[in-house]
Length: 149
Image 1 (tube, rainbow, N blue to C red):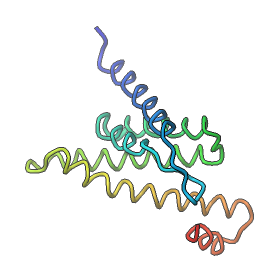
Image 2: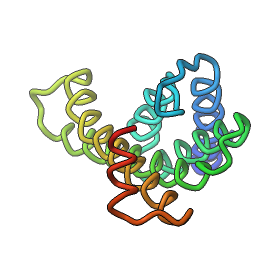
Image 3: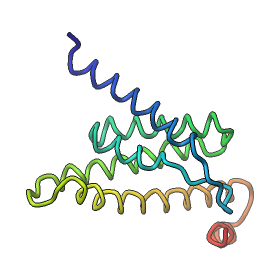
Image 4: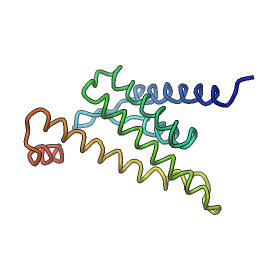
């Protein structure tokens, strides 16, 4: 019989692997050189099922591996941090909302997912500005270029 800690590690590894696969299996390219994928749903699911802490690690690692395997090397660190933060916020909000007895699971998922995804969008926006500044652009010009993109 495996103990709870071993079970948690196995589930986290499984969720990280599923997040990687969900991110890589269907990629719809966007004009901003990124892509739309199913992995964002898995990121939120990591935070909800594993809790904010372990779920953040699983989501960050799974999403990071998808960028690593997909050739998006400049985004690996940013993806890890941003997706981990997304799962952390989504999982934390979901579990806080579970204390409100009248809200069912789908409603809690939507209410937790919206702010978490907003954090993800602004996280990538800030990360891309940082990459532009590191490449030599002025911060204002980088912000305008990223917003226009």
